[in-house]
Each structure stands twice: as C-alpha cells, then as structure tokens.
Length: 109
Length: 113
Image (cartoon, rainbow over all chains, first blue to last red; front, side, top):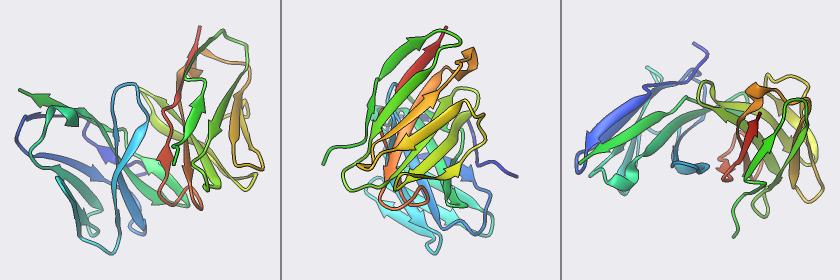
C-alpha cells in the first residue's frame, strides 16, 4: 500500500511495557523514525534506525526492524504517565519523510 | 542551540482571507519542510525548501505556497482560505534535506471561520 500504517490507540498499565507497531511501504527506505507528540506540541524525534540494523536500544526505548515484512516496532519499557502521547512512525521515501497517522498511547493507573 | 521557531503560534482567519506563517530553522540547517496536520488526514507533506529553492512538493493546491530566504528562514502562505484549511502547520528543519532526520517546531494553529 501507499500508506504507513499504525494502529490508532493503545492502552497500557503504568509500569508495563508498551509496544507500538508500524508497517511501512518501501523496502528500500533507508531511515525509519519514531516521533512523539504531546498535546498542543510539535513532534519530538525519539529515535531512528538505519535499514541495515535489526535493533536499536536507547534507555527505555527499543526499536525492532523486520525488513522482510516491512515492520517496525517501538517498545517502551516501564511505561510512565509522561509517556502518554501520540507516537508517529515515519519512513524516508523519495527524499521525503512520510508519516503514519500516529498511535495514541493511553496509560492506565 | 535554539530549536525550530514558528510564528504565530495561534491565529484565527475568516474564509477568503490569506495567511502567512513563518519558520526559523535550527542554526546551520538549510532545509525547511512544511507539514499540515489534521485529525482526519494526519501529517501531510506540503513542500520542502533548500537553499532558497523548492525541492519537493506534496499534493496540495496552488493556494499553498512557500519561500525560503537567504538566511534559511521560511514562510508559507495560504490564499483564499477555506474552512478545511484549519489545521496545525508544522515546520521542520534538517541539515541537508527532508530525507535526513528532521526536527520540528511547535507549530502554528490556524483556525478558519
């Protein structure tokens, strides 16, 4: 398909791990990104991964990339209330960055 | 280092008017991209400027235009505003081009009434 696909909502209990999934479109995409948007704010770059990597870890964040299935995931360990936001997956395609519609992460007490 | 700065943050316009939004990129960044964010359509790419030249363009009507100045600052203009133009307009800058990692400003909230 043409679109970067993400599920729209995810609810997770505080302290659990959150896993946000994304399917991108272009197997030749070289960069894949995760951005976070808090209410009323712009997008904050969380992390990115090169297409020649399978995994990238950065503190509580783990990115997994499955190039064969064009699947990208973001795992947030020990989810906190401050992680409540919309998370956007994005791919670099044709010298543009194409975004998914975002996954709204809701934290349950 | 200061981040991407967008002005104004909030504005209300009436149908038929035009609007100009401004963006100052991160110092040293020569590429500026613009995105429109709406609840229904998500983030849609408008255009990208690099060294004062438009290098990429999304699928928006000609009412949407932009420019970049020699100091890399950019403006976007929307003429003959329609209700559907109500959105958050986000500017992002990067060192080389929109394909590299881009850093966003806080956005300009436009409401058309």
